[in-house]
Image (cartoon, rainbow, N blue to C red; front, side, top):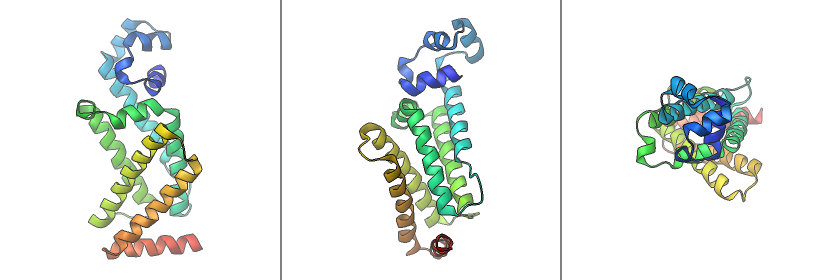
Length: 195
């Protein structure tokens, strides 16, 4: 699995063969087929493993202030993006064929877990529509920023991470104008940061 993740992080899935994985792992082709059945199954298993690694990195490590935890989570997220650049880009840029079935479910599952983690960090049990849309929009922005950063790398990572935290605050500010739940949450977050 480690060999597959490494290869998929450096090459598009279409460019990686079972022979490549077997060679990198020091195993026989037959052994890889025995455990995974084929390249698609291996790719899905590798993506599931990567998703689990990402989720583990993003879990809050303490009871810090929500926006501080969000900033730390972004740093760990971009560590992951950088370490698995090609696989991250291939997964998010993939066309409909790559985003359907199990692969699409993996991507959606990661997004759903990120949403739950952010809600937990912000101490929100059940978001209303405005907050849910705001948080999901922010997650999409983070993904897009990750892809842009991998392509251009013309913004320092710490600057990008701070911009994305500020982006969250700005989005919450806009949503607060339309929803009292978001207004109350934003007020709590600001008060928490001032303490």
